[in-house]
Image 1 (tube, rainbow, N blue to C red):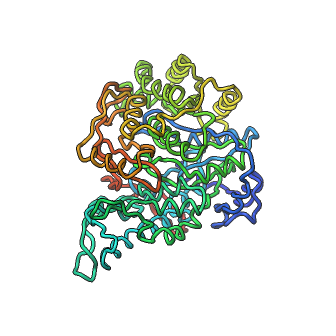
Image 2: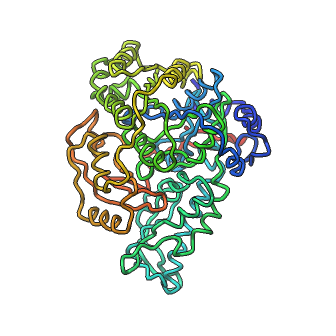
Image 3: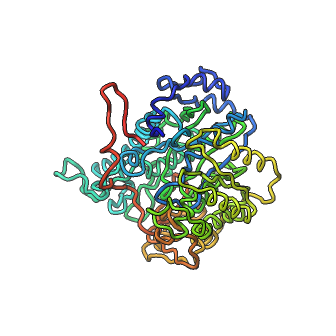
Length: 559
C-alpha cells in the first residue's frame, strides 16, 4: 500500500469554493481563500447563522493509547466520509497539528491511508498561519512583561513569580529552562524563564474556547502572568496587552475549511495539548459545523479518561455543547497490549490477551455511558495482522457490555470500510437515550473535590495526595476567587494511573499532584500529576531527518 504522503500527493482535490458551496451551502463570498484548497470561513457570516438549529454531535474518543497508535483521527475522517457517502450532510472538526510532533516522533495528525484530510502537507506544516499568530501574541505578552519591569515596574511585579513563558512550535529541550535579559542593564532585568511549545500555551486554550472577538479579548485580559510583591495577581489587562494580542489573533479566529480525500468538508482549527489543556478543536469550528451540517464528527485527545473527560467537563461546560453519541475507538493490538503482550508480539494471534485487555476498554465504556451519560458504540479499527477470531471476540466482549462494536477498515478502504460503523452510529442516534448527559463534578464543589471526583470516578484511584507546594498554590488560587473553575488534570495518557507502565485498569492507586497552575483566561485550573512536559524534546531519530523536498517542489517523508 502507498504511504500516507504518497496517497495525499496523488489526490485530485476539488477547489475549496466548490466543497464549501456543494457540501455546506457556503457561498464563495463568505470564504477567505488561502490558495485553491483551503480557506477560512468569515466570522461575520458564521455569526449570521445564530438562529439555525444545531445538528448532531458525534464525539470520537478511544481506550488508553498504546505505542502503536489506535487511529482515532483516521477513524474520525473515515466515519465522516462514510456518513457523507450515505447522503448525510456531514463535517469533520479536527485539531491542527503542531510541527513539534511532525518533525519529532509522533508525526502529523491529518489521518492516514485512505482516510485523510487534505492538503495533508499544508495542514501538517504552516497551514493558514494560526499557530504563528498565537506564538506572536503569546511572545508579545512575554516581551511586554519584561519591558514593564525594565521601565520601572510600576505594577511591582515580583519577577520570581512570573509564570508566562515564551513559545515556539518546535520540539527543543534546550529551551525548557533559560535565563533572559543577560548582557547588561540595556537588555533588561535578568530572570529565569523558559519556553513551551505553542500548543501548550494558555493562549491556545483560550483560542479554542472563545466564540467571538469580544470574548477573545476578555479572556486574554484575564490571563494571570504572575504576582506583585503583595501576592496580588497581575493580569495581561493590567499590562495593557489584551488589545494588541487580540489584534494578532483577529484573522486566525475564523475556522479553516479543507476537505477529505473523498471530498467531505472538514474544519481543522486550533490544537491545544491534550494534557496541559483540553485537547479539542475550537468551539468556533464545532458550532459552525453544527449550524451548517446535520452531523459533526469531532475528536478529543487521548483516551476517554483524559480527552473525553476534558471535552465534557471543560469544552461542553464552557460552551453548552452536548455530544449526542460517542464512538470509542479500539484495536485488537491495543487490547492485546493492555492484556500483557509485548510490542514485538502484537502481530501474533492471542485471543486470551484480547480478553485480558478488555478490562481497559470496559472501564472506558463505563465512564462514557455511566459518568458522562453519553450513548456509545465501539469502532474496531482493523489492522492487517488482526485475525477473524480476534476481531469476532472483541465484538462479542463489547456486546456483553450492552454496546455494539463495528469492525472498520477505512484506513485501507476509505468510506466503504466504515459504512457499517456509520450505519451503527445512525441507528444509535435514532434511539432515545436511556441516560442523561452529566459532568463528572459540579461547579460549586471545591477544587480538591473536583480532582478527587475525576480520580475516583474515572481513574479508579483510591487516594489523592498533594505536594505541599501544590497544596499552597491551590489555596492561593481559591483565595483569589478561582475556586469555581473546572480542573484540567495533566497526567500520562497511557494509563488510568500516573504510572505509564500500569496497563489495563488499575484500581486503588494513588494520584499524586505535584504542581498546580492557573489558566484564568482559558477558565480552568491545571493539576499536574507525574512528569508532564510542556516543551517536548526530539527523539534520537527524529522524523525531521526523513523529511525532504524534491527538485520539483514535492514534499517527501511526512507521515
